Amino acid sequence: MDAHKSLTIGLFGFGVVGEGLYKVLQQTPSLKASIKKVCIKNPGKKRNAPDSLFTTDKDELLNDPEINVIVEVINESEPAFEIVSTALKNGKDVVSASKKMIAEHLPELLGLQKTTERSFLYEAAACASIPVIRNLEEYYDNDLLHSIKAIVNGSTNFILTKMFEDKLDFQQALLLAQQLGFAESDPTLDVEGFDAANKWNFLLTHAYGIVIPPDALVFNGIQNIQAGDASVASEKHYDIKLVAQAKKLENGKVAAFVLPQFIKHEDHLAFVKNEYNGVVIESGFSDKQFFYGKGAGSFPTASAVLSDLSALRYQYKYEY
Ligand code: HSE
Image (cartoon, rainbow, N blue to C red; front, side, top):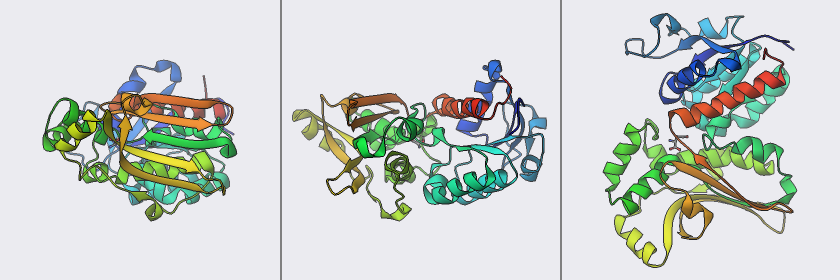
């Protein structure tokens, strides 16, 4: 165990989340965490940080003995897996926000965490500012968790809100989601439900201890929803939302899917608008709980990375 060392970070990715983390760390000196190097793909781009911070050589980070934490926010599945697994094997703790990679590799990553005795944390990979992974993992007993109903993709929720409340058309709303940094670089991942399905996949592992092969989950996106659908829904006092849902059945199995649904105006999830996410949990003894917060965007996502760094500090007695 590395007693009382400061957190020296090697950061992979300087997009919406990476740059957000850089700024957030500058405003949180009490965490005693500093970014030593940032690995990027495109060195020519103008960035709001000193040039000396950047490299394109991943080994400069992965093989630097002074770097004890790798933060990986590149959000490309296979390259991210390569970085994360090498970092763990090299004795570094890892924080990641790459949801597709986590959905596709979770059992291997949890195995690596065990064999390397390092931590792999990824609170930023689902619902950004809502601490949903930690709560599902630590707060609830699997057996008592009756159902979860959630909005886990900020972009589609933003697009639906803008279409139905501000009367933007689909393309205008999507463009705005891209400009505000909510959408994936390939926005069909949001619109067609892939991003929500990836997040739902590993959230279900934390909720129920089940591992679902990535292509086994039933899901759809909002690609077939028309502006006119909203007037029909609202006349009947419903909203249309992209909802991830899971329910424990009497035989102990879990039924789960991600689909657009009509949501009654008085339902907690109807309160979730724009890029916000929400999670409604029903469980034995605690009854119903509702978690709510920003689910996409630079600072809300960086805040979850920050909370993982803070968790590492306590777990491993880094300096504080
Ligand atoms: N594109 C994602 C979303 C970003 O809109 O939810 C946050 O994971």
